[in-house]
Image 1: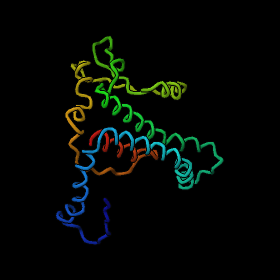
Image 2: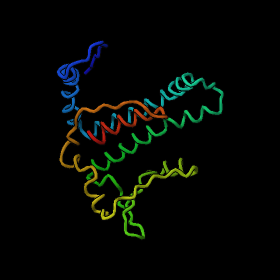
Image 3: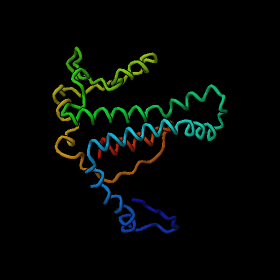
Image 4: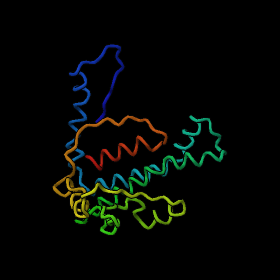
Length: 196
C-alpha cells in the first residue's frame, strides 16, 4: 500500500482528505488481522534492521547538528535512538506472553505501596535490561490512581488482543517533533502495536 500526497496551494476539501486517508483506512483490517506471531516477527526484524542502520542514523543526525564524528557529544546521539529498540523488545515480550496466554505484565511487576496504591514496574523488564541499564540507574515505574487494584491492572492489560486479533484500530497521525531521533518512531510503534 502506498499513498502519494501532492502539494497544492488551495485548501483541500474534506472529501479530498477522506480520499487521501481511505487507502490507510482500508489497510487497518489488514494490520488488525495480522497474527501475533507475525507481529513478533516484524518487530524482531525491525529491531535487527535498526541495529544495521544505526551507524547511518547516527551519522546523519551528527551531520544535521554539525557534530563531528569524533566528538564526545556523539554518545548523546547514540542514546537518542536507544528507546526505540527497547520499546520494540518490550512489545515483542508482551506479545509472546499473550501468545502463551499469560498476562503482558508479570505479576512481580505489580506491587502495592505502604499507602495502598498500586505501583507497576515498567522498566527494566528483562535480565538483559537490568544488566545494561542498572549502572545508570534507569528505571520506570507507574503509580496508579488511588482506588486502582492490582487485578485492575493485570486483568485488562492487552485485553483487546485476548478478545481476538488486537485493538480495533484506526488511522492516526504521528507528527514528528521531539528532541530525540527515536521520538516519532516510538510513537508509531506504540500506535501500531499498542493501540492497533
